[in-house]
Amino acid sequence: MTNIIYQSTRSSDITATASQAVLQGLAPDGGLYVPREIPVYTGSLERLAQQTYQETALEIMSLFLTDYTTQELKHCIDSAYDDKFDIPQITRLKEADGAWYLELFHGATIAFKDMALSILPHLMTTAAKKNHVTDEIVILTATSGDTGKAAMAGFADVPGTKIIVFYPKGGVSAVQEKQMLTQRGANVHVVGIKGNFDDAQSAVKRIFSDAAMKERMAQGGMRFSSANSINIGRLVPQIVYYFYAYGQMLKAGEVKPGDPINITVPTGNFGNILAAYYAKRMGLPCAKLICASNENRVLVDFFRKGVYDRRRDFLLTSSPSMDILISSNLERLVFQAAGEDCDVTGAFMKQLSEEGFYEITDKMKEELTDFYSDYSSEAQTSEEIRTLYEKAGYVIDTHTAVASNVYRRYRDNTQDQTKCVIASTASPYKFLRSVMCAIRPECADMSDFELIDELHALSGVAVPQAIEDIRTAPQLHNTVVEVDEMSEESARWLGI
Ligand SMILES: *Cc1c(COP(=O)(O)O)cnc(C)c1O
Image (cartoon, rainbow, N blue to C red; front, side, top):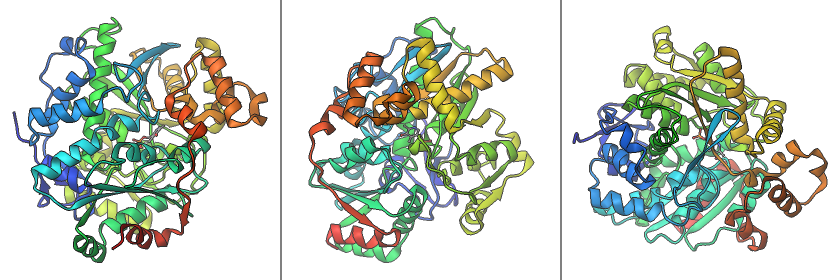
């Protein structure tokens, strides 16, 4: 098997093994680690249909994380994908109104982030052992609502780690906030910030590259790492479920081996859809990658015009986990489209941070023709939830509804009959109020707990454990700081 080396998107001299890249998160020059070559899937598609999720995970992850032994990977996979998930198959496809919804929300925090964040702590502690790192690993994470809880659930009480999560106060759903503020674990700290997700994410990146802070950390026997989707330890596990989904489509007789599928992904930081892009590059039969945005439609403009421009108002929508104007992982796609040219990629990212925009060349645009992109307005998203429920009796969350609506209009406009897998990224229980108001506007005055029962009655879907938990859990966190206090707040809590 080829040994895969990772390098920064901004400098080909900065390289790392897979386990080093997992440990570091971000490359030291602020770039993102990318595999020097994208491995090819040479396994049999027919076999995918017969494999368990764990078997497919081992097959795909071994191709990328080449300095982990099979034993190590197996251990990580078995520790992650167990009965923390409420279905034994970990994820499943659900057909509704001519599309296949890939339910990625059966983990502990009922959002797709669990798919990767349940395994990341294991990949990271294994990496520390392999690289003889004895420092305590401090995870610093900015969240638009779902990463924070899923990361804390993954890292809570994992020996040798601490985790600090920053979320935009007022920019997440009531359930998301409650889930975070009730998180147990002596090694977790949750902080609300007076700013939006982009403010939090940019500040975290600054703290990572702050030399003085790094020195203070080292003296305290600690080092930072990232649980955000910039970490390849997040990205690689996300590739797995696209292969698994294809296997399930085969098994159900919806496709024959080699038939292409389309994939639609509700997109924020561009991590989930990037994983689909890697799957395609590896050889998964896939035609279009449909990138769905909410009203923060910065990616739609990028794919249509080739201009990435974050100079616009940040809108708060009913799909808060996609309220993002700086989609970090797009840097990896830009790097590929630029013919893996670090100078070009670095220059665009510099321009983005200094001037707020960049424009790719026509040649780069041609590299992106696999992508189709559109957005769903708040009214369309709400309408989508109601119509799908009325047509198929299936209730989806607001993020999934963004994707579902974009796909529906894509199919109507293009008449493309290729079967489509839609990444269903959260349980409707997580975005309860918006979902219930879409289906039954008269529910607007109900309390959250009444809404839970109402959704249960209407969908017939059992109330997830994650929701039962917050009904009674005490609030354990209440820190709120300004954006420019994030660094000091971290140092204070870490005692350095
Ligand atoms: C994080 C998240 C997204 C966006 O995923 P990205 O990988 O950031 O593009 C979409 N839906 C939900 C529910 C999420 O939690």
